[in-house]
Image (cartoon, rainbow, N blue to C red; front, side, top):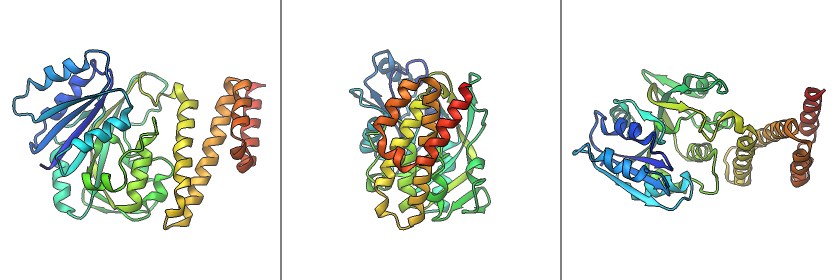
Length: 315
């Protein structure tokens, strides 16, 4: 089997039908659908069964597990998969109808590549979101670390250096060899956010990436997204956790410059966290500084700048 599409879902009865239909109606048919129900307490399980039963030719299964987070759900889907390549889709996003056929063509053109991705359209509800419409162009604007070949982008071994700023690889527009995901140790289940950045970064250290210069999915930014701007401090804190985790593994990096880039990112994130926390509450700020003395000591200048910035905003 060529592809396994893995959809993790928790209490997604209102959106899962749209996601499943976008998979079931693919023009390329050599695939299976695995829905991992992450302990939903609403009617998600019944909705999945009902929608999938409308497609007699669809090869599918629903795996029901206790609520352990989306990284665990995706890992479980990978382990259950029979396909050579894994495609991920979040329950509130959708595939274009040509999604799988485009990745199939790419894998034929680049048989030695294990990691593929494409662009994604962004649909936003709510004024809080940045009004981005796609991902790939923003990644390519970071520097010269790729070769263009018709509708494809072949990334060099420098890709990790440019992913440090943020992956800009949309989860719902990827096709990764199952064996590559196994080899790098799956998603890190200790992360509840930015787990995608961690995965793409670790994959890029060992494998080359090719991108299709087309949008093949739609990402929906809405008020219930875990990455919503209103959760800025929480999300920065989680990004900081992932960055520190990668720094801890940096002795294995071939390029020592990567470690410096990650440390600089750690400094930037910590400064942003201090700023946003101080704008909310000096009590929270004091707790943050007290519980992160090593980071305060490590990034003294960034700490002072962030505190000064927050104080100026309050005056």
